[in-house]
Length: 183
Image (cartoon, helix red, strand yellow):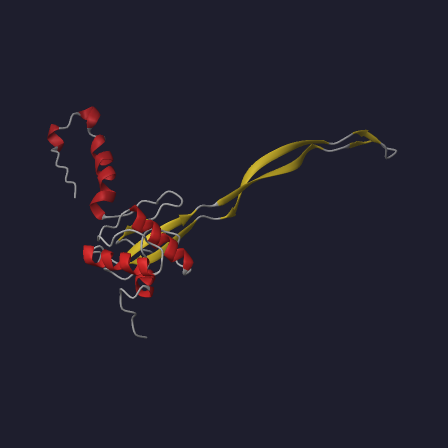
């Protein structure tokens, strides 16, 4: 948590406006709010989708919007027609281009094991489970390194889970590492 203490009496007139900017810049770090990730980048956080249970942890990937360029002919001057019905002047058109969203951006939320669950012993178990499935060739060293994240991502994709290196709770359940809740 970042704490800023400034006495108003000590602020000079031209610089008093800096305080709200400093506080606004600190706010996301202080309250734990997650910023939107770049497309395709996975994040894990305790802040989840609306209605998420308190104390649960969430991962998110962002599917970017699909945008297309549309060209359209717009009439700017109608045809001039003589009294006898013949055309005196052709109509005039211009081409207008505009961007159109075909598919909107989507936040893909998925529940993840919370950081306190991701102990070196748990990660080593993940690595052993991935070795047994032929997706991880490294040692079960308990470090969630790049090769482990890649293996988790590949496994999740293969079972229809999120395209993310952040482990979904359903992935951990399918590996037999977290109990499946009773209905």
